[in-house]
Image 1 (cartoon, rainbow, N blue to C red):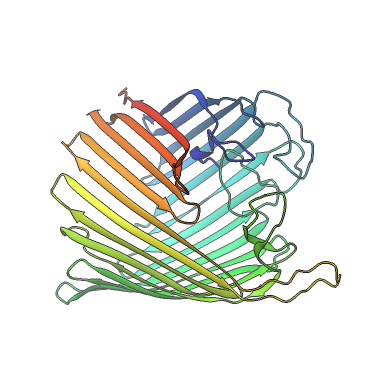
Image 2: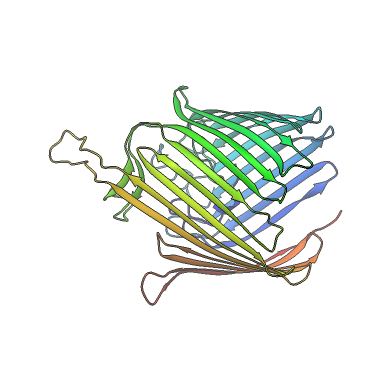
Length: 424
């Protein structure tokens, strides 16, 4: 219902919009937990000045349970109407989200709860709600989970984030644990997860299965091996993965997935070394089907603890997708939809340096290079904890297009953030 990174981004293009100012208050009074945020953003070409306000109140009840309420408002300065009722981003309008939730912990191992939400957007009618319910049981041997989600077609939290609307979804998980105090293998956990996603007519849209086993060793390292059979159905227009002409208003030489039912299968292998050692690393490999093509991804990270004050991390992620040739399926001889085999690769290289000068003064630097868009970004952050719960941050961000020489600066920002904890 609320995703703070949406504040300061244009609704249509996601381009940065200047933040004029705001106030955030968070804390606890007795058994109540309070959160309040109000921020005003400036205007740009297609976005007016806008106020974002969020209020969250929850109350602890019983021993380990709570109930809560949430309200989110996105209020622009301008008209409150829609040009196209089917497109909530077609014109200037307000947006509201309301919700309530409850979470109960009973019998030491059993938890259950849920939430209901509704959004209000001019021009959007029924199907504006979303709800979920869950129940979990966990002890030293068994882990059992059950979730149910229902997200309406017109559920539209514009100050939040929702991956998919117009669905009903059931998710279950089951895991069994074995532990040893003396064996080389300290912990063994075979587990499975099943996600069944339907449309609002309760017709199957996506089915995801995960069958895996985790091995945790006495030396602190961990290995997971898993088998993931999938089902995905695309209806209506093709699903565009990439538009090669760079124009969002034209199809260009698209890399797309055509409508149909697909049954890919993927495998994954994960290795995680002991992070407490001077040198450690991790490797994540995933490969298998991708709709009617093939997919492979590898992520390798290495960590060095140079001293108790200095830590460095270097990581490389490479992803490749291969799609086969597709015949012409348009009966009009003047329109060709045939496509040859296509392939695209992306490599992301990251480097991080963390320095803890004292228990209160920290410096962190993150450098990142993306080969797909020839983009180099840097994030430098200084943090001073001048008292418990209170901080000063100084942050510098820069992003450059390094295709060609000289490089082009895409954006740059310098931010100072101050927080102060007040005790009542």
